[in-house]
Amino acid sequence: MSTRYKHLFFDLDHTLWDFETNSKETLHDLYIKHNLSSIGVPDYEHFFERYTFHNKRLWERYTMGYIRQEELKWKRMWLTLLDFKIANEVLSKQLSVDFLEHLPTKTALFPYTFEILDYLKGKGYQLHLITNGFEKVQYSKLERSGLKGYFEHVITSEASNNTKPNKEIFDYAFMKANAEAEESIMIGDNLDADIQGGINAGMDTVFVNHVDEEAYITPTYMVKDLKGLEEIF
Image (cartoon, rainbow, N blue to C red):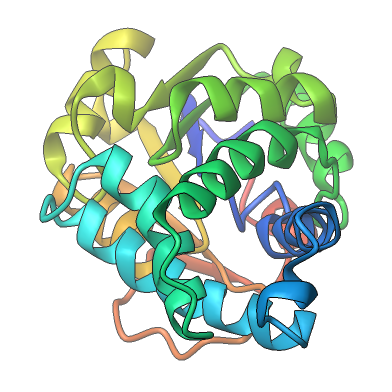
């Protein structure tokens, strides 16, 4: 075990839990359930592409504090349907409810997730999560995917009343975990939320670069996949 770090703070979505695979499966289920092809959404792949576009943009606005959680939840569906000239607020809100109910039942993880968590626990590190996701949804994901037992503390934006990259959510995490920034490291896939957030909090960082993205913010370390963490820890 490296004597430099005691507390490893992980991001969840897109780092350990394969959000794109799981959300794509969930949206396909909803596309069929609500028979969206019959009301003017003829192609599921196009539907998923538009949802992904709006979801990413609205999450960025949520992270920056420009919109509230409830607005994010249903407006990503509303804007997606509007792209197909469907102005149906009731359906948008029902899709939002169904999505958040069914998404946590999906269990796709990135390769080597369990192996690396077992490896790190075996080395004596204390593992925690810091996530911008919603409290109930994130805990359900952890339970269903078998990840719950690995983490001593799960810090959500909802519980901390803040979002990454704001320093306050990290300060809240340090308090909950009884940790200091100097003995902690942030591990995540998002350069703005995880890497810049860790920097804002005075932490070292690991950029898990699953998609070979150009690192426009410089992390302490960068790995191509979760197995690469063995070279650091």
